[in-house]
Amino acid sequence: MANYWLFKSEPDEYGIEDLRKERDGVGRWNGIRNYQARNFLRDEVVVGDGVLIYHSQCKVPGVAGTAKVVKAAYPDPAQFDSASDYFDPKATRETPRWFCVDIQFDSAFDEVVPLKAIKQQEPLGEMVLLKQGRLSIQPVTAKEWKYILKMTS
DNA sequence: GCCAACGTTGGC
DNA sequence: GCCAACGTTGGC
Image (cartoon, rainbow, N blue to C red):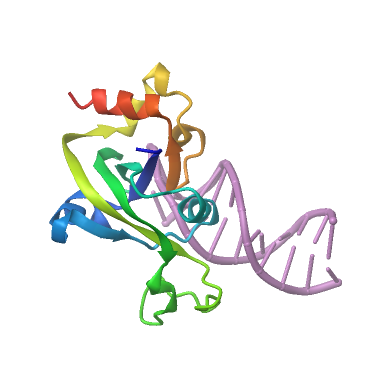
C-alpha cells in the first residue's frame, strides 16, 4: 500500500454505509469542488492507497471506516451534466476541471472515532485534519493511520 | 445558520 | 500584478 488519505463526506449524502452497499463495495468518489483537494486526487492518489472515510457535517464528526483506492483519477462526469448539482459550465471534455476516483469499501467501525477524541491525542496533533480544517481530501501518515485504527479497538 | 480559512477570479 | 470579492468547506 503506497499512501494513506482521509476523505471527507457528509453521511447524509454519501457515507460509509452507502459505499458498503455498492456492488462489490466499489463506489465513485466525486463531487470534489475544492482545488487543493482536487490536486491531491488528480496528482497523488494512486491505486492501492488506503483511505480513512471521515463523516462531516453531522452530529458526531469523525472517522467512520476505511476503504482502498481501486481506480486512479479520471474526469468527474458530473461536471458535464447540466442537470447535476456538480455541473460546472466552465469545464469541457478537453479541459476538465474536476476529478474523481473509485474506492472500495474495506471496513466500517462499530463506533465512529470522533473528531473530539482525535483532538485529544497528542500523537495526532500534526494531522492535517486539525491543522487545516476545511480540506476534504488530505494526506495521512502511516503512524496516524495506525493510531486511528488502534482507537477503534 | 454563522463565520473563519483558503484558493481562485477578475477589475483596474 | 495587486487585492477585494467570491465560492467552498465544515465545526460549532
